[in-house]
Amino acid sequence: MFRRETPHPLFSYLIYLGCLVSFVTISFNWSQGRNVFFVTSYVAFIALIFNPKYYTKRIDLLWAPLLFVAVGLGSILWVAAYKQPGEYINLYRAFMVTGKLLVATGFVLLIALNEPINFSRLIKPALLLLGASVNLYIIYQGVTQGISRSELNFDRATIAAYIITAVDLLMIYTLLHVSKKHRIILFALGFTVSYIAIIHTQTRAAILAFPIISIIMFLVDKDITKKQKYISCLSMIALLFLSGFFLKKIIDNRIEEFKIDMSTLSDIHTSRENSVGSRISMSKAGTLVGNQHLFGQSAEQRGNEISTLVAKNPLLAGVLPYTTIHMHNELVDTYSLRGIWGGLLLIALYLSLLWLSLRSQKNTALLAMTITIITYGLSDVLFFSSEATGIFGIAVILSVLIGKHTATTVQIADNQNNANP
Image 1: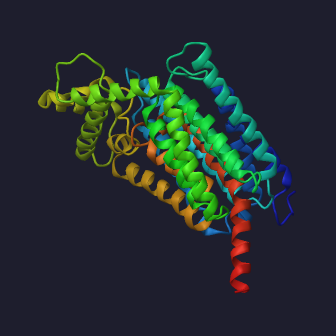
Image 2: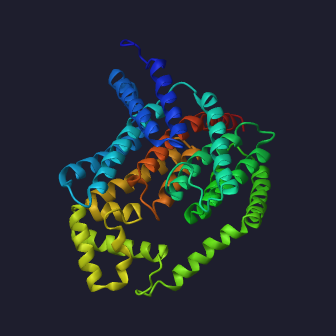
Image 3: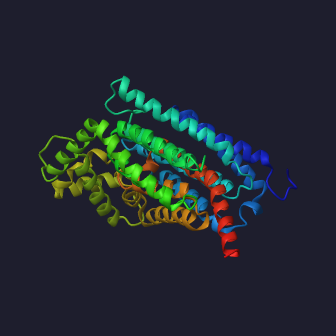
């Protein structure tokens, strides 16, 4: 093990088994899944210590893992600098946990990006089984238990929507590459079940984003012919209308709530919870207080600054209930607490994942996951929630593993075509 030029396969089997176990259990029992993932990251760190030259020989594969570690350490160091007892203690605890998860993701991702063994055939069946289980369970909750917004086993429907999105994008990608002959039918079936499950969470961001991200993933995949893309796009449009018809009541309720939110944006006296208005207020307030503390500030100081700001501008009052939580925008929240350096690290992480998926790996599964992280980060703070951070961190790792073989096959085919014009 100590004299091998390449890492011992035992490391890889332990790491990816841990990732799969964690990915599965996160969907139903977060605490156990988190512990398994932390242990997995320890194994990844040991593998890195034993084989540092092997895992660092490609500079282009270092940036994304290093930035995951940097963003995570940034959260941890910020908490260490400012944490104190009081009403903001849960905020500090949340960022401490997610910071550790981001660091863990960085170490495991570095191993996955340099993995010499093709694990996709072992991972894909588990992803298909998990996708079917999660979707059917959440549809069961919505249909038979009378739950207005299905939540899996969590207390927030939005978390359920995020978990479903991560699981289903990997499932749909797997279905696209199971069988060339039946991929259109499998993709359509997987998309339909996934979208119905997401609609049952009644999470507007997911309802709007999931079909668009699925179409992008499908259209940029070089392993799919143009004819198949045309047929699938038409099928997806038909399926969207079909899903909307059968779930019309749920969709109409969310649209009506959105209209009411928009109509009461300027009414500071309304007692109704305004999701849209509050998010706009949080973005404005978070940016303004961040501008006053370019190198970061404590959560307590941010809360005081926001209270002063709202006193001068009552239209921003929608931000007040969220000062002890977050600003419902990943970049704004990071900038308002950790300043310019925190915001730049986050943007760099986004760009590194986009470059990795589009240029270095040419991995459509990773591209879809990256777009999802960025999109959901516009209306929520994924790296505040330990469940969301864990699910998307592992999803990025699994995207690399299942997409690497396909990308390599496509590259070989392109090279052969160029060599034989």
